[in-house]
Length: 105
Image 1 (tube, rainbow, N blue to C red):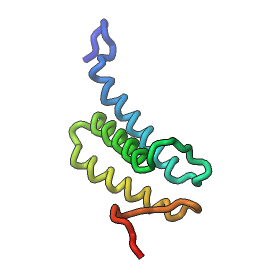
Image 2 (cartoon, rainbow, N blue to C red):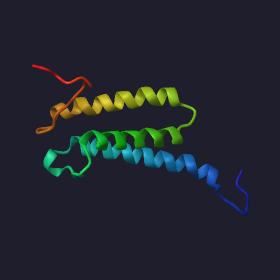
Image 3 (cartoon, rainbow, N blue to C red):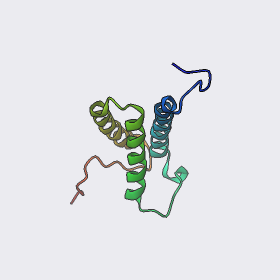
């Protein structure tokens, strides 16, 4: 229970802050994944590094925000990633890749 000296302790804010960051990052992934390529910001970083960074940060934030549900989070984040890739099939100008192996003709 909060005391008069510290109405909200730093420890109780950490999971809440991580949850807000996690959901904001997830929203950013959705937005950046589903906008047309011409509206997507570009960095000089390799495409795979961009993906790794935002997905790792999102997974880390969810892990901090929901500490007792890591197994469920792992499953849901894989489902989320797959859903984003499938949704890209319906965005003109966007490509979707559901496999990590390159497609060979």
